[in-house]
Length: 200
Image (cartoon, rainbow, N blue to C red):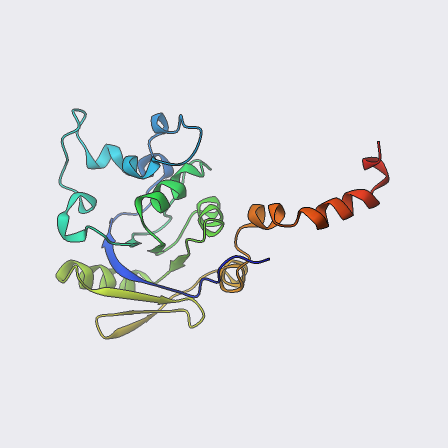
């Protein structure tokens, strides 16, 4: 049984500018002391969004005009640093369903894909154009079409890229290997029964 096919993501966006935004900035390590990923969203980008006393800083994610945005726009090498899957989990739990950037760190990209949260790349010029559209009118709706590898926004269409393996997994509903494994209990048991070293 496959999961839902993810071919398009539509929603408003917010830009968090900058290159090399690492996973510790996305979710500070002290918030990783959790049994489940529930609740991680409120701590996303915490140290750049809040003062030590909890007072909000001036940050796009604290700006009411971007409230409800479901697409995150950022720079190059997004998600670099440690391999913590808490980073894409925090972004997903915050409410984002796709990330647009000039480039992604390998492990962050893979962890995001297994959440069903596509990460698509665009050129620097197109990233800047998308950011400008969103900042000019935060109500601008973006439409990411994975199969066409394009992003619609403000009456324009921008090309985007996504790795073929991720594209195939997302658009065919095979983007979470753990969920697929858990749904395939009978097949797993059948394979195990054929393996002599599993007979005990």
